[in-house]
Image: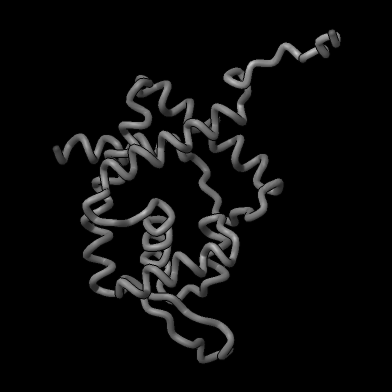
Length: 177
Protein backbone atom coordinates (compact mmCIF):
# COMPACT_ATOMS: atom_id res chain seq x y z
CA UNK A 1 0.00 0.00 0.00
CA UNK A 2 1.34 3.38 -1.03
CA UNK A 3 1.37 6.23 1.46
CA UNK A 4 -1.16 8.97 0.73
CA UNK A 5 0.63 12.06 -0.52
CA UNK A 6 0.28 15.17 1.56
CA UNK A 7 -2.51 17.34 0.17
CA UNK A 8 -2.58 21.04 1.00
CA UNK A 9 -5.56 21.95 3.15
CA UNK A 10 -7.04 24.34 0.61
CA UNK A 11 -10.71 24.57 -0.23
CA UNK A 12 -11.51 25.90 -3.69
CA UNK A 13 -14.63 27.66 -2.34
CA UNK A 14 -12.38 29.86 -0.18
CA UNK A 15 -10.28 31.14 -3.09
CA UNK A 16 -11.02 34.58 -4.58
CA UNK A 17 -10.32 33.47 -8.14
CA UNK A 18 -12.84 30.63 -7.86
CA UNK A 19 -15.48 32.87 -6.28
CA UNK A 20 -14.94 35.55 -8.94
CA UNK A 21 -15.34 32.92 -11.67
CA UNK A 22 -18.55 31.68 -10.03
CA UNK A 23 -19.87 35.23 -9.70
CA UNK A 24 -19.11 35.77 -13.40
CA UNK A 25 -21.12 32.63 -14.26
CA UNK A 26 -23.98 33.88 -12.11
CA UNK A 27 -23.80 37.39 -13.62
CA UNK A 28 -23.92 36.00 -17.16
CA UNK A 29 -26.83 33.73 -16.22
CA UNK A 30 -28.82 36.62 -14.74
CA UNK A 31 -28.03 38.84 -17.76
CA UNK A 32 -29.30 36.11 -20.10
CA UNK A 33 -32.46 35.60 -18.02
CA UNK A 34 -33.27 39.31 -18.13
CA UNK A 35 -32.39 39.92 -21.79
CA UNK A 36 -32.88 36.61 -23.61
CA UNK A 37 -35.86 37.87 -25.61
CA UNK A 38 -33.57 40.40 -27.32
CA UNK A 39 -30.80 37.92 -28.19
CA UNK A 40 -27.82 40.04 -27.13
CA UNK A 41 -24.88 38.78 -25.08
CA UNK A 42 -23.27 40.87 -22.37
CA UNK A 43 -20.21 41.39 -24.62
CA UNK A 44 -22.44 42.53 -27.47
CA UNK A 45 -24.22 44.91 -25.09
CA UNK A 46 -20.87 46.35 -23.99
CA UNK A 47 -19.84 46.86 -27.62
CA UNK A 48 -23.16 48.47 -28.59
CA UNK A 49 -23.13 50.78 -25.58
CA UNK A 50 -19.52 51.81 -26.18
CA UNK A 51 -19.98 52.44 -29.91
CA UNK A 52 -23.13 54.44 -29.18
CA UNK A 53 -21.20 56.62 -26.70
CA UNK A 54 -18.22 57.00 -29.07
CA UNK A 55 -19.51 57.16 -32.65
CA UNK A 56 -16.83 56.60 -35.26
CA UNK A 57 -14.46 54.77 -32.92
CA UNK A 58 -12.25 52.17 -34.53
CA UNK A 59 -12.38 48.48 -33.71
CA UNK A 60 -9.03 48.46 -31.93
CA UNK A 61 -10.19 51.26 -29.63
CA UNK A 62 -13.38 49.30 -28.95
CA UNK A 63 -11.26 46.28 -27.96
CA UNK A 64 -9.31 48.37 -25.48
CA UNK A 65 -12.40 50.11 -24.12
CA UNK A 66 -14.28 46.89 -23.30
CA UNK A 67 -11.19 44.79 -22.48
CA UNK A 68 -11.54 42.11 -25.17
CA UNK A 69 -8.80 40.71 -27.36
CA UNK A 70 -8.87 41.75 -31.02
CA UNK A 71 -10.18 38.45 -32.39
CA UNK A 72 -13.04 38.25 -29.87
CA UNK A 73 -13.96 41.86 -30.61
CA UNK A 74 -13.90 41.07 -34.32
CA UNK A 75 -16.40 38.26 -33.80
CA UNK A 76 -18.65 40.45 -31.65
CA UNK A 77 -18.57 43.21 -34.29
CA UNK A 78 -19.22 40.70 -37.08
CA UNK A 79 -22.35 39.43 -35.30
CA UNK A 80 -23.62 42.93 -34.55
CA UNK A 81 -23.00 43.99 -38.13
CA UNK A 82 -24.81 40.89 -39.48
CA UNK A 83 -27.86 41.94 -37.43
CA UNK A 84 -27.59 45.51 -38.80
CA UNK A 85 -26.97 46.88 -35.30
CA UNK A 86 -23.66 48.54 -36.16
CA UNK A 87 -21.94 49.59 -39.38
CA UNK A 88 -18.26 49.52 -40.28
CA UNK A 89 -16.82 52.15 -42.58
CA UNK A 90 -13.30 52.54 -43.93
CA UNK A 91 -11.45 55.39 -42.24
CA UNK A 92 -10.71 58.25 -44.61
CA UNK A 93 -7.34 58.69 -42.87
CA UNK A 94 -6.24 55.03 -43.04
CA UNK A 95 -7.92 52.47 -45.28
CA UNK A 96 -6.81 49.62 -42.98
CA UNK A 97 -8.88 51.03 -40.11
CA UNK A 98 -12.61 50.36 -39.77
CA UNK A 99 -14.73 52.97 -38.02
CA UNK A 100 -17.82 51.80 -36.12
CA UNK A 101 -21.21 53.45 -35.78
CA UNK A 102 -24.44 52.25 -34.23
CA UNK A 103 -27.39 52.02 -36.62
CA UNK A 104 -30.91 53.25 -35.86
CA UNK A 105 -31.88 49.59 -35.34
CA UNK A 106 -28.94 49.19 -32.94
CA UNK A 107 -29.91 52.33 -31.03
CA UNK A 108 -33.49 51.10 -30.73
CA UNK A 109 -32.28 47.75 -29.40
CA UNK A 110 -29.88 49.48 -27.00
CA UNK A 111 -32.78 51.54 -25.61
CA UNK A 112 -34.81 48.35 -25.13
CA UNK A 113 -32.05 46.33 -23.49
CA UNK A 114 -30.56 48.95 -21.16
CA UNK A 115 -33.34 48.81 -18.53
CA UNK A 116 -33.15 45.01 -18.61
CA UNK A 117 -29.36 45.12 -18.19
CA UNK A 118 -29.76 47.47 -15.21
CA UNK A 119 -32.31 45.08 -13.68
CA UNK A 120 -29.79 42.26 -14.11
CA UNK A 121 -27.11 44.31 -12.34
CA UNK A 122 -29.49 45.07 -9.49
CA UNK A 123 -30.40 41.37 -9.19
CA UNK A 124 -26.71 40.49 -8.93
CA UNK A 125 -26.26 42.93 -6.06
CA UNK A 126 -29.65 42.42 -4.41
CA UNK A 127 -28.32 40.27 -1.53
CA UNK A 128 -26.39 43.36 -0.38
CA UNK A 129 -27.88 46.46 1.21
CA UNK A 130 -27.20 49.80 -0.59
CA UNK A 131 -24.13 50.61 1.50
CA UNK A 132 -22.68 47.13 0.93
CA UNK A 133 -23.41 47.47 -2.81
CA UNK A 134 -21.38 50.68 -3.00
CA UNK A 135 -18.58 49.19 -0.93
CA UNK A 136 -18.52 46.00 -3.04
CA UNK A 137 -18.46 47.98 -6.29
CA UNK A 138 -15.69 50.25 -5.00
CA UNK A 139 -13.58 47.27 -3.91
CA UNK A 140 -14.29 45.40 -7.15
CA UNK A 141 -13.29 48.46 -9.20
CA UNK A 142 -10.10 48.77 -7.12
CA UNK A 143 -9.18 45.13 -7.74
CA UNK A 144 -9.88 45.39 -11.47
CA UNK A 145 -8.01 48.68 -11.90
CA UNK A 146 -5.03 47.62 -9.79
CA UNK A 147 -4.71 44.28 -11.58
CA UNK A 148 -5.61 45.56 -15.07
CA UNK A 149 -2.08 45.18 -16.43
CA UNK A 150 -2.16 41.45 -15.66
CA UNK A 151 -5.02 40.89 -18.11
CA UNK A 152 -4.53 39.40 -21.56
CA UNK A 153 -6.77 42.24 -22.77
CA UNK A 154 -6.22 45.22 -20.45
CA UNK A 155 -8.90 47.87 -20.42
CA UNK A 156 -8.12 51.49 -21.12
CA UNK A 157 -11.44 52.55 -19.62
CA UNK A 158 -11.15 54.35 -16.29
CA UNK A 159 -14.12 54.68 -13.95
CA UNK A 160 -13.27 56.78 -10.89
CA UNK A 161 -16.30 55.81 -8.76
CA UNK A 162 -18.14 52.80 -10.18
CA UNK A 163 -20.00 52.13 -6.95
CA UNK A 164 -21.92 55.38 -6.92
CA UNK A 165 -22.63 55.12 -10.67
CA UNK A 166 -24.22 51.70 -10.17
CA UNK A 167 -26.24 52.91 -7.21
CA UNK A 168 -27.54 55.81 -9.31
CA UNK A 169 -28.39 53.46 -12.19
CA UNK A 170 -30.13 51.04 -9.87
CA UNK A 171 -32.25 53.80 -8.34
CA UNK A 172 -33.28 54.93 -11.85
CA UNK A 173 -34.42 51.37 -12.62
CA UNK A 174 -36.38 51.17 -9.36
CA UNK A 175 -38.03 54.53 -10.07
CA UNK A 176 -39.10 53.35 -13.54
CA UNK A 177 -40.84 50.19 -12.27
